[in-house]
Length: 171
Image (cartoon, rainbow, N blue to C red; front, top):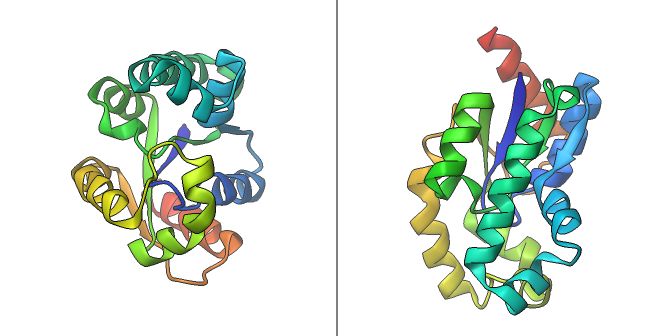
């Protein structure tokens, strides 16, 4: 069973995903890295040069690839911040694995992405606009199979341990 980590930008999907995969002894994949490999350029460059529709097309293709690879059948996969907010992607996630929403407080997210956000994250312009986007995506995040509230200062291995425990309880 694939485990898809879902959440807003800065929620810790990549960091926690690596820790969770190590803990479970399974492969780890990052959707953002798969998109960049497919595009041959950074996500920011895709947004700037081709726009969000092209990014979402690449995201859909990369997600389909990761979801169909037999060697990733039991993997942990970190998704993008908006992946689950797009219905086709949400259906694919639900059909091919378990979705886990990493839910730190927005203040934690803003603190993590802070100054780098404007430079590295194409949809982060300022905290007010980013908060509006976060609120817009909440309904999609709430549809995940599991919600893991992440406390400020909680480490990736601690969050990974709690996720592993929650998954084990489901079996």
